[in-house]
Image (cartoon, rainbow, N blue to C red; front, side, top):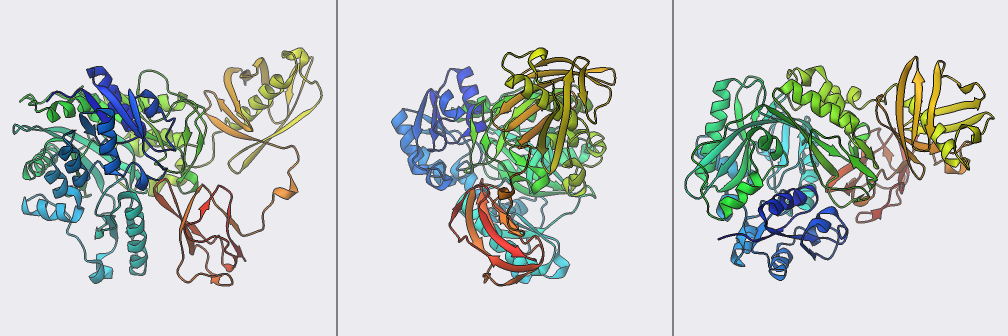
Length: 632
């Protein structure tokens, strides 16, 4: 059957990615959207769009019945699930086929075989694929530690907890179950040994209905935070040829064992001793599929459509070329426990020479309802070193204005000696290095604050130009995180005189650009203002500042020990038996917030008495809402 119109049962970056290929093939596109996504980029770009009433995923993108109705109403003849949401739901795949639509994915039976990680492991063990044996939580002993509690359905790091003390196991199981149920509609979890210092290596497979199975090389996805991938690359560097061939054989064996069709990924954990263990098979397109596309020079989405139409794959595999690296750009603050951020993305511009797969465009809003990934930036080059350097440089020069992001962490990670030398590729990378990678800003922050102050003065002057700037002493305050920059300067006949900036000369000034000479070197600063937020981009690094009042407002202070909501979200539960008046230990969990499909634990900042607990489970809270007060 020839596919003429595709509904994408997804949102954001992956929906836009699929639409791009459909346009190139001359295939019409249909979007679905929640109320929160009514004006999202993927909706604006589709040929047609159907509303799914509500905001929460459970009411919208996880409603397979509504999506099938939407496909019928829009006249689509095929459904592509993307990744996440219903992409690995055998019931949804069967419903799509039952409605007479083409399912762009594997057969429901293959999805079902791999849908539960526990059942998948049993199947792979029978097929002779090496794996880690599961551990019965009820019978776990200290000898089994550390353990990894994992959701049986879904992925993306949701429903996963590392357990290093037996006393933590029950709480980890409960927390993982709750998070898995919220994200996937399935609260089943299991436990297996947690391998310290392991590498996360995966194999891309593509199979047709005529018996051909491609194994399209390896990817390394070891750099992860909260069990979610941050930087991925292909091919996985430093693998011995024998291990690489064994992974390819095991992946092909897994695909053939379940009669697989379409694109899928078989994931392995490679321990420090070089042994590979089967983790899971993702029966869908992976977030990191672009790095495979770049080195094989193929379009996996186009091939998915071809397989769904019944066409055979060529017998010969394409040949790989060079190296590709992908970085996931998130709206999050790595220094604050990876807390997701919300707000308007005023500008997202990445220099040419790299691939940008983005879920947002300028002016779009990051909400609390969905994953905070803004974009993926992918660089290809003949060698790994060149690809890593190219990606780091592009991220560094990108203009990203809006919520806080992990951009600086990405650049520092790519340039870290362990990553650059491919000597520290394991899942513990951020456990070892987060403090330095997510540390304070660069030495250029103070100069960026000076540039912001000068540009602001120029913008506020009635006519602009040096002659119209105030000549008296000026004082401005800017904050970046916990650091406050005090800028004191004056402009006179002899030019700029700024405290703490000896040897700095002002060469040019506009409301959005400042040129300074610093110790004989000319530096250009681009300045953009959005309310009290100022973004300064320069060769010294990007700097997001908050303009502060000259004199702090005493009324803005909060009671000592106050715990404020770091993001909008829902209070999902309070610690068992916790009540006002209880004594709590430093670091003790008090309550959990659910935001962007992840649970975030709120803990006591110090030992003391819980003197206020004004929130209850199910309550919606905004940023800054008082959650609790612990009095030392």
